Amino acid sequence: MEGSLRAAGCMAVFAASGGVILLALKVHKHLMSDFMHKIEHQFEMMKDENKRVKFSNEVDVLPYHGIDDRHQKMKQYVSISTGLTKGAIDDEKRFRSMPENWQALYRGIAQFRALKKHNA
Image (cartoon, rainbow, N blue to C red; front, side):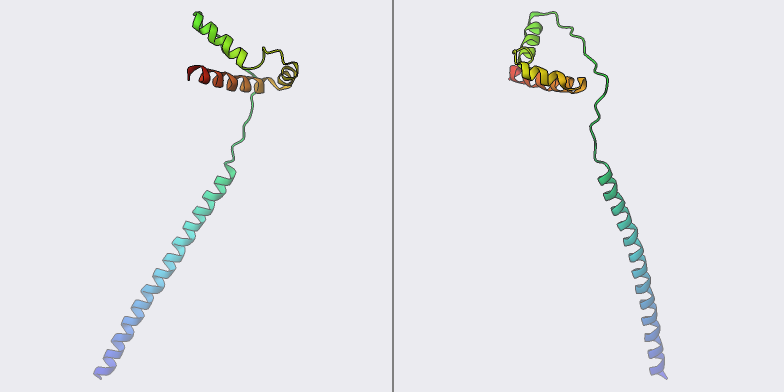
């Protein structure tokens, strides 16, 4: 009799622990599934976030407020360093054939490089 009670007790313990294990596996599977869906969604969003450069059709020219000689010299230095006043006809034609927004972009890059060299 005692043996059968022990066996019944062991079976009850095994059944309860097995139920807990099965429940834990189901919960783990569900959580992993949700986690994987979130990760996949983030990767898809990262693929879609490729940024594209869009140039404006309007080019704003900033007014020049420098009156001082230093600013005038700097302006001359920058205009010479852009290569527009060197008399290179082919470069001038190539530059003028670009859209205005590209011209402004390249002119700004050249001015930045010239100022960087001048200040160094």
